[in-house]
Length: 354
Ligand code: 1CP
Image 1 (cartoon, rainbow, N blue to C red):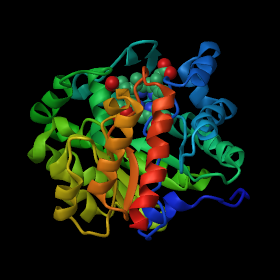
Image 2 (cartoon, rainbow, N blue to C red):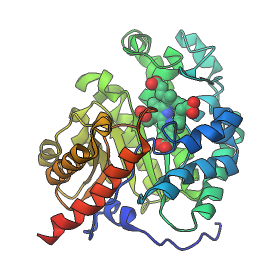
Image 3 (cartoon, protein in one colour):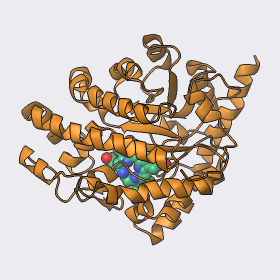
Image 4 (cartoon, rainbow, N blue to C red):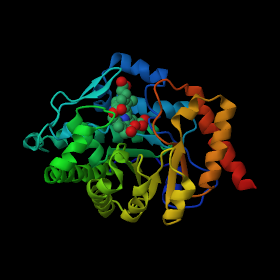
């Protein structure tokens, strides 16, 4: 294992492991990205996947929000779609549009094209980026690794890109349940190994993004979502029992008790979920993360501060990692992100003082 610099700010890790702390840690989903002019400057010279696959560039972009704001964690610059790439599917990033698969999966016969033969070679740059970034961070904050969840990745692999309804992917669940399970199982196996190797390479916590969980509803999600998220956390915890694992099942409040029971240390809530309601439904020691509406950052600074105060009160002072309910948007004002972060620092300290 590489000899990494000692960690100076372990607030995020202490909360993620369930400790009581003096302040609420804060980071933002998609904190490294298009709303930052310094990110746009890097992207002007380098295509998206070149940044992902070049450790020096990935580290530079990962550190940009850390240099700008008093955040409590960094998240490695990468994308959930490296896993479909590792399974042999081509993924292009079309500027202004998002991800595009020239040859998505159409029928179950296409599963023949899904193979993990090149997986190690395709994923090695992510591991190298984690190791390099961990050194570059120099212990300022912990480094989060991540992966997409099987269902969300299946949705992209069949749909071929972003979609409103993901109806082709959902059609598979009804028309081809066995092939769907086969694909989800292949994904879950690779994702488990991928997350373990991310920790070996330097990740200090992990988040699994199931961004399109909410499209399934309780019954389909119980069949096609939860079992695979369970197997992933079980696999990771066997290898790395002390590394905190966060589950983000966006749009699926009904999934939270099962994810807590599955062994996730923290649940990331979107802005439509009530922390009080979720807390009442699960073990009280579980850490909750979230959940300011990203669009709240379009408000005036004083309104952002009020909303942060509201959010912190709803979660309570302990067992909470402050975050947005989903990622930053490209047209967000970086100064408003700064207001959000500073407000979490300020109010979470005053909350404990009273
Ligand atoms: O042109 C560009 O620069 C591309 C924009 C971009 C960025 C900055 C994409 C394409 N991916 C990323 C980075 C990224 N993606 C990170 C970096 C770390 C950080 O958070 O700062 C992370 C964690 C992701 C994860 C990701 N990619 C998710 C899950 C989280 C979420 O927001 O729901 C998803 C769904 C993707 C797919 C994806 N990649 C890129 C885009 C624009 C999208 C979404 C497209 C869609 O709406 O379907």
